[in-house]
Amino acid sequence: MIIEKNIYEKRRADLRCALQKQFPSFLGPIVVAAGFEDSRYPFRQDSSFYYLTGLEEPGVVLVMSPEGKNILYAPVYAYKRELWTNSRVYNKQGLNQLGIDDIKPLGQICAEGVSLFLTADEYCYLIQDLQQATSVCVIQEGREHKALFSRWGIADKAISGFSLVSRMRRKKDRQEIEQIYTAIDGTMAAQEAAAHVIAPEQYEYQVQAGVEFIFTQSGCRTAFPTIVASGSRATKLHYTDNNKPMKNGELVVVDCGTEYQHYCADISRTYPVSGIFNKRQKDLYTLVLKTQDHIARLARPGYYLFNKDVPEKSLHHCAVKFLQEQGYDTFFTHTVGHFLGLDVHDVGLRAEPLQEGDVFTIEPGIYIPHEGIGIRIEDDYWMTYDGAECLSQELAREPEEIEELMQQRGEQEEEEDDNY
Image (cartoon, rainbow, N blue to C red):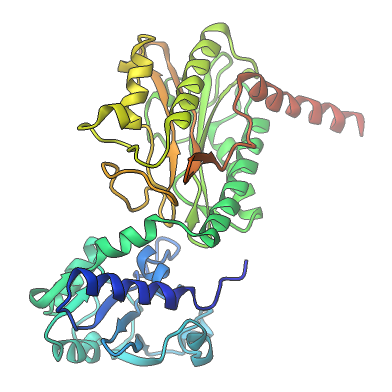
């Protein structure tokens, strides 16, 4: 997908306008820092930094001056970084396309790569420039950045602009919806692959492997650790060991999501290991499905994801009430949904009214430990002016559809046997 070249310039301009509206007397620079590298994990850019710049480079710092200049401060390495990585920050033409006017050295040479533990000398040129300002707006997302700004000695004259960026990020434009759609497409394909792998005595990690193969094949990566939880393990909401065999007669929850160009999907399905729901399983599954449909019909601008002060318009409390009428509210042990976007649990206050442009999940569940049953159905929704539109509606949801999807594995195996 081609990103509109000036989208990041527009976002930075919108941030400046929002900041001046909230703090009319503020005339200082806006500072936003990239994430850091960790040799144990693939690098993942700080979401707000990416939202404002489109850059993947770790360790850099963007300073938006009061005069409208965008200056990128980049670490000075002891080696030619462009020989080791596909870096854009040393290509002035590439930076100009993103609306960045100039690049400056962050500080003195950093020989060991960029991490939270860089010394003041390695930040010295940035620190000198910021100390000349009377006030600074910092976009503090993570604890590591708060610690960093404090170490720079500018915390006492800094105001936080993170809430402003959060409000901007919460409302998704069409371009962002397209990226989320791509992530959802990859996740739906992965769920279908999972349904074809699930069978008695197969291991949970074999399902995980099938899911994550599709992620890679789709040009995506995992948005969060894949959950494949069978039997009683499905009652543990964030079970990620995925190392047990699936048994005939059990249910298995598959909760997974891809990340495409930083935008995330999050979809859960519950499958019968045997390929067919028994009566008890089907009754409970149908109740969870009806709860999800009920909440999706209610969801519209002005409702809330979770607001205990307005329970009649709180989607979570409405879900609890719906399940309470059937005697199962005590088995619903998490909230009904969360915002979705550049992060799986994206920015946004659940106690604020839902608005047009929000993307969020609806994910009711029932968890009965003494029966070894866990059921969760989760889909991704986009709020429009007149209600919530399900972005993952093409994936099987009805119990009969789930069973039919699982039967396709047996049909494929028969076809393969016939070909020998």
